[in-house]
Amino acid sequence: MSDKKLVDLSHTITDGLITYKGLPAPIMCDFLSREASKKHYAEGTSFHIGKIEMVANTGTYIDSPFHRFAEGQDISELPLEKLADLDAVKVKVMVPRGRAVGPEVFGARWLGGKAVLIQTGWSKHWGTDQYFEGHSYLTEDAAAHLVGQGVTLVGIDSYNIDDTDDGRRPVHTMLLGAGIPIVEHMCNLDLLPFDELRFSAVPVKVKGMGTFPVRAYARW
Image (cartoon, rainbow, N blue to C red; front, top):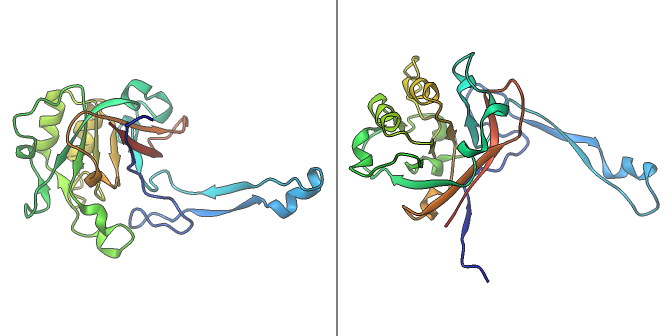
């Protein structure tokens, strides 16, 4: 039996779920119910086809450069080398530290070529009104540090990787401008070790979208 461990780092998307304040919740329903499908198949055979209407920024999702830049790669153009089976490390933000997460949290460790998963603990507020207010975020200097080190991807278990009071969105601008995808609204980072992780967050291959939900997970 394999001793490899897998941890799901994604929130479950449900009908009516509010991920981001001001954006509509998904609407989930039957396109073809099991009962209605029976007339199409043999006795005792039925199928279900669901229908979902949602904005792309729902649940745990990934940002591609197109989310911020019109000329950037969209979701369909992200190479799997930036999404799947990435060498990864976890960085834990120690509390109390305030909302802003600066470059000092990364210490002297070299992060080049890695997916950096930032555990702030904010995911504990998921599903509550608190989740939308006063979240932890990266500073512009922290983003510059990650870009300078050449990280592959950055993930965070918070409401937004940027300070939502800053309309410039400097962290999105710097990371996505450098071609570094961002995964937001993660969870269960407390279950991960700090090193020797493999991380994946692969969206559906949709053309013309800058964001899309992922099933993010780590193994070691």
